[in-house]
Length: 143
Image (cartoon, rainbow, N blue to C red; front, side, top):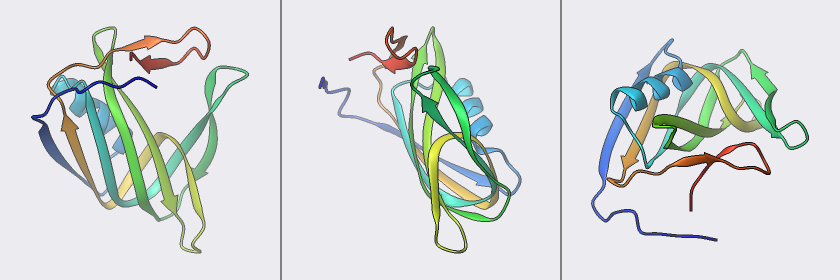
């Protein structure tokens, strides 16, 4: 394990998504517009549809796992934004709950909000960089 103190003073944003807005694209757009790096985020809300994926170690690619086209609760969305080749990259994991109490989770591919999603982003002034990891093929934050 590696650790480092990024900064004691943090900048914090709140994003309020409304019905019909696409969450993953909105997060990417905000990250680019604000030139975010070294940012973490969390969110709750509700969705009318969601597409999740999982990382297949054998193929070294994200593959679709769950597609729900129904009203679900966004129980947890957590992630980070770091720079890869100078551009902000959003990485998010999500857990959603269905009406019957069952849950699904995975890597966020796409989600449509209904009626709201409240995202809190906290940015440290020091930039995090992502580099391609030779073993996994993933862009991982540098220690």
